[in-house]
Amino acid sequence: MDNLNDPRFRLSMFVLQPTTFCNLDCEYCYLPLRDVKRKMPGQVTENLADYIGEHILNKVPVIWHGENP
Image (cartoon, rainbow, N blue to C red; front, side, top):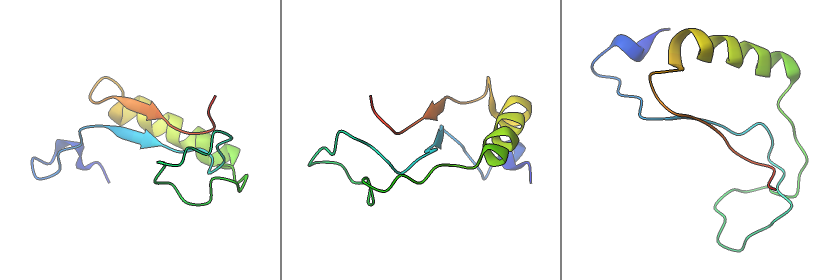
C-alpha cells in the first residue's frame, strides 16, 4: 500500500480530521455535521501515527484539522 514511491501518485499533503466537531460553526465552512461530536478511535490514531512516521513524515506536510480552537 506504499504508493508514495509511485510517480503516478503525487501526494502534496496529508490531512487528518480526528473529529467532525467544531465549536466555531463558521458560515463559510464546507464540512457537514460540525455539531456532531464524533471522534477518531484511539487505535486508528495510533495506527495513523505509525504509518505517518514510517512513510509520510518529512515527505509532505501533515495537517491535523478540526475542533477549533
